[in-house]
Amino acid sequence: MSALYILIGISLIVAIGFLCAFLWAMKQGQYEDDYTPSVRILFEDETKTKNTNKKK
Image (cartoon, rainbow, N blue to C red; front, top):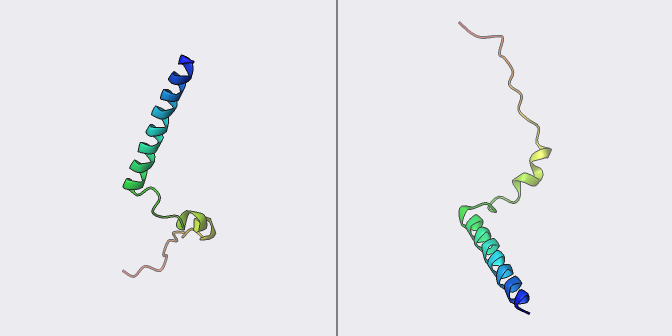
């Protein structure tokens, strides 16, 4: 029965740790942009081309 109390205590500590990590991530703005990553693959990369007709 005492092992059950130890496991409950450890699980509460782990749960509080995950809650603190989640709140820290929210405060830091990790979940602000939820639209751009999902459509970023749809946009073409801009290719850098050399301009051969430079004026002197």
